Amino acid sequence: MKIYLDLVVLLNFFFDFLLLYGTSKVLKEIVPIKRLVLGSIVASLSVFLLFIKLNSVSLFLIKAGISIGIILVTFGKKNFIKNISYFYLLSIVLGGSLYLLNVSFTYRNQGILFINNGLSINFILLIIVSPIIIFCYVKEHILYKNTYGNIYEVLIINGSNKYKLMGLLDTGNRLRDPYKGRSVILVNNDILMDGDIVYVPYKALNTTGVIKCYKVDKVIVEEKEFSNCLVGISKDKIVIDGVECILPNIFKEEL
Image 1 (cartoon, rainbow, N blue to C red):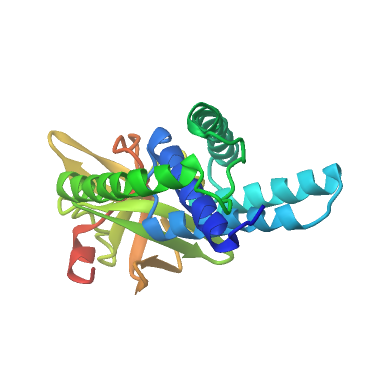
Image 2: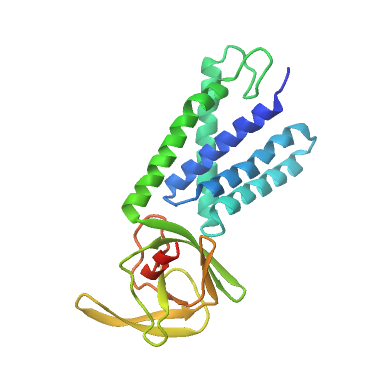
Protein backbone atom coordinates (compact mmCIF):
# COMPACT_ATOMS: atom_id res chain seq x y z
CA MET A 1 0.00 0.00 0.00
CA LYS A 2 1.35 3.41 -1.01
CA ILE A 3 0.73 6.40 1.28
CA TYR A 4 0.89 9.96 -0.01
CA LEU A 5 2.04 11.87 3.07
CA ASP A 6 1.35 15.35 1.72
CA LEU A 7 -2.25 14.46 0.93
CA VAL A 8 -2.70 12.79 4.30
CA VAL A 9 -1.44 15.95 6.06
CA LEU A 10 -3.74 18.12 3.91
CA LEU A 11 -6.73 15.94 4.69
CA ASN A 12 -5.93 15.93 8.39
CA PHE A 13 -5.50 19.73 8.38
CA PHE A 14 -8.88 20.18 6.71
CA PHE A 15 -10.78 18.01 9.16
CA ASP A 16 -9.04 19.59 12.14
CA PHE A 17 -10.02 23.01 10.80
CA LEU A 18 -13.57 21.75 10.41
CA LEU A 19 -13.57 20.47 13.99
CA LEU A 20 -12.22 23.71 15.44
CA TYR A 21 -14.60 25.80 13.36
CA GLY A 22 -17.53 23.66 14.48
CA THR A 23 -16.43 23.86 18.10
CA SER A 24 -16.26 27.66 17.93
CA LYS A 25 -19.79 27.77 16.50
CA VAL A 26 -21.20 25.44 19.15
CA LEU A 27 -19.53 27.51 21.88
CA LYS A 28 -20.66 30.74 20.15
CA GLU A 29 -17.15 32.15 20.32
CA ILE A 30 -15.60 34.50 17.78
CA VAL A 31 -12.29 32.95 16.77
CA PRO A 32 -10.08 34.71 14.17
CA ILE A 33 -9.29 32.57 11.15
CA LYS A 34 -5.54 32.80 11.85
CA ARG A 35 -6.10 31.05 15.19
CA LEU A 36 -8.17 28.34 13.51
CA VAL A 37 -5.37 27.82 10.98
CA LEU A 38 -2.66 27.72 13.68
CA GLY A 39 -4.69 25.26 15.73
CA SER A 40 -5.18 23.06 12.67
CA ILE A 41 -1.44 23.10 11.96
CA VAL A 42 -0.71 21.96 15.53
CA ALA A 43 -3.33 19.23 15.16
CA SER A 44 -1.77 18.05 11.90
CA LEU A 45 1.39 17.11 13.80
CA SER A 46 -0.44 14.01 15.04
CA VAL A 47 -0.15 12.53 11.52
CA PHE A 48 3.54 11.85 12.08
CA LEU A 49 2.71 9.62 15.05
CA LEU A 50 1.63 7.03 12.46
CA PHE A 51 5.26 6.54 11.52
CA ILE A 52 6.75 6.37 15.03
CA LYS A 53 6.77 3.20 17.12
CA LEU A 54 5.37 4.10 20.53
CA ASN A 55 3.79 2.15 23.34
CA SER A 56 0.18 2.88 24.22
CA VAL A 57 1.03 5.03 27.25
CA SER A 58 3.48 7.25 25.37
CA LEU A 59 1.06 7.58 22.46
CA PHE A 60 -1.74 8.62 24.81
CA LEU A 61 0.42 11.22 26.56
CA ILE A 62 1.64 12.73 23.29
CA LYS A 63 -1.88 12.90 21.87
CA ALA A 64 -3.13 14.49 25.09
CA GLY A 65 -0.34 17.08 24.88
CA ILE A 66 -1.20 17.86 21.25
CA SER A 67 -4.89 18.21 22.15
CA ILE A 68 -4.06 20.66 24.93
CA GLY A 69 -1.85 22.62 22.53
CA ILE A 70 -4.64 22.75 19.93
CA ILE A 71 -7.13 24.23 22.39
CA LEU A 72 -4.68 26.74 23.89
CA VAL A 73 -3.55 27.99 20.47
CA THR A 74 -7.10 28.29 19.14
CA PHE A 75 -9.19 29.37 22.12
CA GLY A 76 -6.71 30.42 24.81
CA LYS A 77 -6.82 29.48 28.48
CA LYS A 78 -10.32 30.73 29.24
CA ASN A 79 -12.99 28.00 29.63
CA PHE A 80 -10.36 25.39 28.81
CA ILE A 81 -12.27 22.36 30.15
CA LYS A 82 -15.44 23.37 28.32
CA ASN A 83 -13.58 24.01 25.06
CA ILE A 84 -11.68 20.71 25.04
CA SER A 85 -14.81 18.77 26.03
CA TYR A 86 -16.78 20.11 23.07
CA PHE A 87 -13.79 19.58 20.78
CA TYR A 88 -13.62 15.89 21.71
CA LEU A 89 -17.41 15.53 21.46
CA LEU A 90 -17.41 16.87 17.92
CA SER A 91 -14.36 14.70 17.11
CA ILE A 92 -16.31 11.60 18.09
CA VAL A 93 -19.36 12.66 16.05
CA LEU A 94 -17.35 13.54 12.93
CA GLY A 95 -15.10 10.49 13.25
CA GLY A 96 -18.09 8.19 13.57
CA SER A 97 -19.74 9.80 10.55
CA LEU A 98 -16.61 9.35 8.43
CA TYR A 99 -16.31 5.73 9.49
CA LEU A 100 -19.91 5.11 8.45
CA LEU A 101 -19.32 6.77 5.08
CA ASN A 102 -16.18 4.74 4.47
CA VAL A 103 -17.92 1.48 5.29
CA SER A 104 -20.98 2.37 3.22
CA PHE A 105 -19.39 3.78 0.07
CA THR A 106 -15.83 2.46 -0.19
CA TYR A 107 -15.51 -0.79 -2.12
CA ARG A 108 -12.25 -1.73 -0.47
CA ASN A 109 -11.73 -1.28 3.24
CA GLN A 110 -8.49 0.70 2.99
CA GLY A 111 -9.07 3.07 5.92
CA ILE A 112 -8.94 6.84 5.71
CA LEU A 113 -5.51 7.05 4.04
CA PHE A 114 -4.85 7.65 0.37
CA ILE A 115 -3.95 4.48 -1.52
CA ASN A 116 -2.34 3.65 -4.84
CA ASN A 117 -5.46 2.30 -6.56
CA GLY A 118 -7.93 5.02 -5.74
CA LEU A 119 -9.01 7.80 -3.40
CA SER A 120 -10.73 7.43 -0.08
CA ILE A 121 -14.21 8.81 0.43
CA ASN A 122 -12.66 11.49 2.66
CA PHE A 123 -10.86 13.12 -0.25
CA ILE A 124 -14.17 13.40 -2.10
CA LEU A 125 -15.65 15.05 1.00
CA LEU A 126 -12.66 17.40 1.10
CA ILE A 127 -13.37 18.59 -2.43
CA ILE A 128 -17.11 19.00 -1.84
CA VAL A 129 -17.18 20.45 1.67
CA SER A 130 -14.20 22.85 1.51
CA PRO A 131 -15.97 25.51 -0.61
CA ILE A 132 -19.05 25.23 1.61
CA ILE A 133 -17.03 25.80 4.79
CA ILE A 134 -15.18 28.76 3.27
CA PHE A 135 -18.47 30.27 2.08
CA CYS A 136 -20.10 29.85 5.51
CA TYR A 137 -17.12 31.38 7.30
CA VAL A 138 -16.98 34.42 5.01
CA LYS A 139 -20.75 34.89 5.17
CA GLU A 140 -20.78 34.73 8.97
CA HIS A 141 -17.78 37.05 9.22
CA ILE A 142 -19.59 39.65 7.09
CA LEU A 143 -22.75 39.17 9.15
CA TYR A 144 -20.87 39.83 12.41
CA LYS A 145 -19.27 42.93 10.94
CA ASN A 146 -22.58 44.31 9.72
CA THR A 147 -24.54 43.40 12.85
CA TYR A 148 -22.13 44.23 15.63
CA GLY A 149 -19.82 46.76 14.02
CA ASN A 150 -16.11 46.11 14.48
CA ILE A 151 -14.85 43.22 16.59
CA TYR A 152 -11.17 43.05 17.55
CA GLU A 153 -8.73 41.00 19.57
CA VAL A 154 -7.83 42.97 22.71
CA LEU A 155 -4.80 42.44 24.95
CA ILE A 156 -4.87 44.21 28.32
CA ILE A 157 -1.50 44.37 30.07
CA ASN A 158 -1.02 45.36 33.69
CA GLY A 159 2.36 44.44 35.13
CA SER A 160 2.86 40.70 34.69
CA ASN A 161 -0.86 40.10 34.14
CA LYS A 162 -2.25 39.79 30.62
CA TYR A 163 -5.89 39.46 29.59
CA LYS A 164 -6.85 38.38 26.06
CA LEU A 165 -10.41 39.33 25.18
CA MET A 166 -12.63 39.86 22.16
CA GLY A 167 -13.85 43.47 22.06
CA LEU A 168 -16.61 45.32 20.23
CA LEU A 169 -15.93 48.88 19.11
CA ASP A 170 -19.07 50.73 20.21
CA THR A 171 -19.47 54.26 18.87
CA GLY A 172 -21.91 54.88 21.71
CA ASN A 173 -19.31 54.27 24.41
CA ARG A 174 -18.10 57.79 25.18
CA LEU A 175 -17.39 57.14 28.85
CA ARG A 176 -14.38 59.09 30.11
CA ASP A 177 -12.58 59.64 33.35
CA PRO A 178 -13.51 63.25 34.27
CA TYR A 179 -10.28 63.69 36.23
CA LYS A 180 -7.69 63.00 33.50
CA GLY A 181 -9.81 62.45 30.41
CA ARG A 182 -8.98 58.75 30.11
CA SER A 183 -11.28 56.58 27.99
CA VAL A 184 -12.91 53.56 29.64
CA ILE A 185 -13.01 50.02 28.25
CA LEU A 186 -15.92 48.05 29.72
CA VAL A 187 -15.34 44.36 30.49
CA ASN A 188 -17.63 41.62 31.76
CA ASN A 189 -18.04 41.47 35.52
CA ASP A 190 -16.83 37.85 35.61
CA ILE A 191 -13.33 38.88 34.49
CA LEU A 192 -11.03 39.17 37.50
CA MET A 193 -8.85 42.28 37.32
CA ASP A 194 -6.36 43.71 39.76
CA GLY A 195 -4.48 46.97 40.17
CA ASP A 196 -5.16 50.50 41.38
CA ILE A 197 -8.85 51.37 41.48
CA VAL A 198 -10.52 54.52 40.17
CA TYR A 199 -14.25 55.21 40.45
CA VAL A 200 -15.62 56.95 37.37
CA PRO A 201 -19.04 58.64 37.48
CA TYR A 202 -21.44 58.05 34.60
CA LYS A 203 -24.82 59.29 33.48
CA ALA A 204 -27.25 57.22 31.41
CA LEU A 205 -30.97 57.51 30.67
CA ASN A 206 -32.60 58.58 33.94
CA THR A 207 -29.76 57.01 35.94
CA THR A 208 -26.45 58.07 37.40
CA GLY A 209 -23.78 56.14 39.24
CA VAL A 210 -20.13 55.21 39.38
CA ILE A 211 -18.19 52.45 37.65
CA LYS A 212 -15.31 50.65 39.31
CA CYS A 213 -12.28 50.97 37.03
CA TYR A 214 -8.71 49.73 37.11
CA LYS A 215 -5.56 51.47 35.98
CA VAL A 216 -3.64 49.37 33.47
CA ASP A 217 -0.24 49.79 31.82
CA LYS A 218 -1.48 49.52 28.25
CA VAL A 219 -4.06 48.05 25.94
CA ILE A 220 -3.17 46.56 22.55
CA VAL A 221 -5.85 46.35 19.85
CA GLU A 222 -4.88 45.00 16.42
CA GLU A 223 -1.19 45.74 17.17
CA LYS A 224 -2.02 49.36 18.04
CA GLU A 225 -1.08 50.41 21.57
CA PHE A 226 -3.20 52.58 23.87
CA SER A 227 -1.92 53.73 27.25
CA ASN A 228 -4.24 56.52 28.34
CA CYS A 229 -7.25 54.39 29.27
CA LEU A 230 -8.96 52.60 32.14
CA VAL A 231 -10.70 49.23 32.35
CA GLY A 232 -14.16 49.41 33.91
CA ILE A 233 -16.19 46.51 35.27
CA SER A 234 -19.63 46.44 33.64
CA LYS A 235 -22.47 46.04 36.10
CA ASP A 236 -24.46 44.09 33.52
CA LYS A 237 -23.11 41.12 31.57
CA ILE A 238 -22.32 41.84 27.93
CA VAL A 239 -24.85 39.72 26.04
CA ILE A 240 -23.33 39.81 22.53
CA ASP A 241 -22.08 36.32 21.63
CA GLY A 242 -18.31 36.03 21.89
CA VAL A 243 -17.79 39.65 23.00
CA GLU A 244 -16.12 40.16 26.38
CA CYS A 245 -15.43 43.90 26.39
CA ILE A 246 -16.69 47.16 24.87
CA LEU A 247 -14.12 49.50 23.35
CA PRO A 248 -14.62 53.28 23.52
CA ASN A 249 -15.57 55.43 20.54
CA ILE A 250 -12.21 57.24 20.54
CA PHE A 251 -10.44 54.02 19.43
CA LYS A 252 -12.26 54.28 16.09
CA GLU A 253 -9.85 56.97 14.94
CA GLU A 254 -6.88 54.61 15.33
CA LEU A 255 -8.36 51.30 14.13
